[in-house]
Length: 107
Length: 118
Image 1 (cartoon, rainbow over the protein chains, first blue to last red):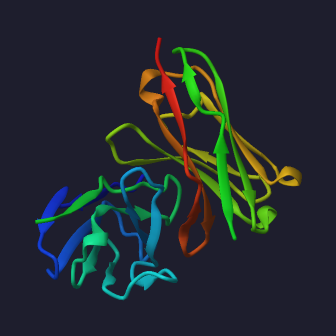
Image 2: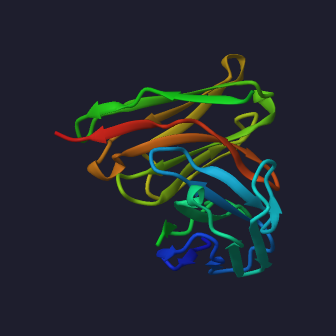
């Protein structure tokens, strides 16, 4: 099974800051990597798939990169509405494991 | 508009059973793989199980293997999750979601809460 490790587990940044979240897979997963955003009390929402492709309707300040084992989610200019927990997930094969999550707050 | 609606959650004693349902609308249900993902209170997301579009293949997380069974009725656009021998650690919000190959889980239900407690 592929293990997904996210860091940091939480971060606090100012509005307008650039925010970076990393996700590492225990085995190479090519680009079968998705990022989700979950706001409190809500279901997760798909942000990025194939490691770097923005889902329709997602603001362009979100970006993803990486391949193989190391991946990054970047928010180029943090906005108040981006307060949420972000998860990476591998979908190369079952089990489709999630990272532990990164909680993003506004400083 | 795609919609997934979970139901069947509630409070159940340890060792007992519960069946969750996930009813879909607005999509070509018999073309879609459906997954269940759960989230324990205050914890992260845990992938639980998937069922292929035609029900031919199912994959379970080790934590539920042998206790949970997934099935689907494409004529009713519904996926079922039969949960037996429930444990306190199964307490969570259970989400169903549509999986699209190459995309991930692109549509999610609102979740249904399962509490396992005596």
